[in-house]
Amino acid sequence: MKKGSILWILLVLVNTVWAQVIKVEITKTATGNFQLLRGGKPFYVKGAGGDVFMDKTLAAGGNSVRLWGAENAQAVLDEAQKRGLTVMLGLWMPPERHGFDYSDKWACQDQVEQFKSIVNRFKNHPALLLWGVGNEVDLEYTDFSVWKAVQNIAAMIHEEDKNHPTCVVTAGIDAPEVSLIKETCPDIDILGVNTYGDLPALPEKIRLFGWEKPYLVTEWGPNGHWEVAKTKWGAAIEQTSTEKAITYKDRYVNYIQNDSVLCMGSYAFLWGQKQETTPTWYGVFVDGKQTEAVNVLQQVWSGSAPQYWAPKIDSFLLNKQLPYQSLEFRKGANVNLQLNVTHNNLESLKYKWELLPESEFTKSGGDAEKRPDAVPIAVRGNLKDGYNFKAPFQKGAYRLFVYIYDTHEQVACANFPFWVR
Image (cartoon, rainbow, N blue to C red; front, side, top):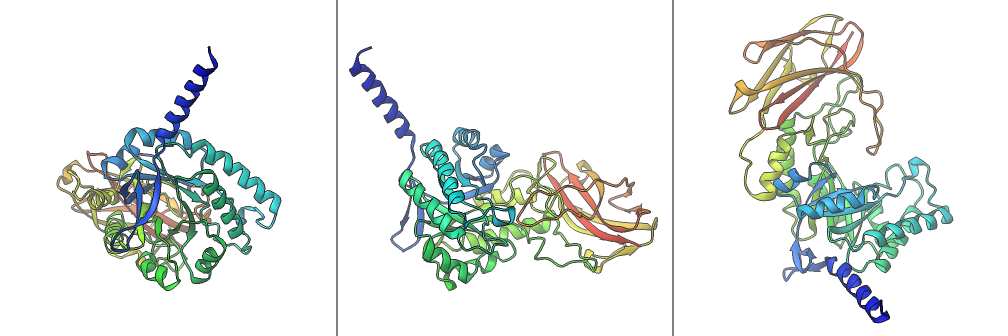
């Protein structure tokens, strides 16, 4: 083959690769609102935190998914591209609580080099939306050198990739931290904030603390397990799936979407399921079925309600009491249970009951937790007349879970913590 032919083929290959790149940039509208432009068109992030159920993300009107690390980046980017979705690709910076020393300049340099290879591998992928630099590296940290590391990574990204912005993700927000990021990290383009019960205060805090660039709500959802009322033995009281759905809608419409000046969108957490305090606390999917939160997200993302709505839990009581009343039972005591459900076809619903000991493996920052082993339980009765079961014969803290399935791959769930004397 002639030399000229080889050069022509290389040129075609290079042009083909670069033709796939979709440039993402931050601009301001005529009214002074920040916005993302993707391929020259306005792009508001309607995102799902997690890379599973991508077809359901698309069906609900979502347009982006978030990864915390790059381990499965190629597969996720490719799958997202097939569906017309984008990806916030995370560069996982090990937090200080996991033993990484951000005062060790050689370790930090090695980290930058590792991330550099990732950036160069994926920077031209058409599904790439932006880079997430770390996730909650500020949680339980003492070494402020981490912000220098964040800046070095962001600067490297800007050097290697001229087409995608950078975003640092923090655990909540406070004034000293905003000042540190502003002073130390000029190459950070977007502030990403993970926030739950405090989300309604976020737009005000962003301005009060002096952040002048745009921001994303990179994790949000129900009230966090650290933000809710507890029983007298310390068990956090979880919202029902219906209460969570109400929370999702209120926070999206009134606080995320309403801040059109600085907020460029969000990633709902978690588009999947995980054990964190309980197996149902944060996931908008349970047993592979979608909860009412997905119905609500479809409503606010797409502007239209789904054809079928998940079951609603109106109340879930033990002995006519609420979880806040810290119920205690004798070993083997008979317990009455009242459940009120709304659905357009109650007769079609299926019910599952599960009893779990209170988790003893809770951790911080979303670190992996072990799901407690279920305790055998027999719940008898029906929706109309009520149910009953016998308390376990071993003392301690428990949660009784109910899962209600419809015929359209949807589920409602709730749990009630109690103590056995």
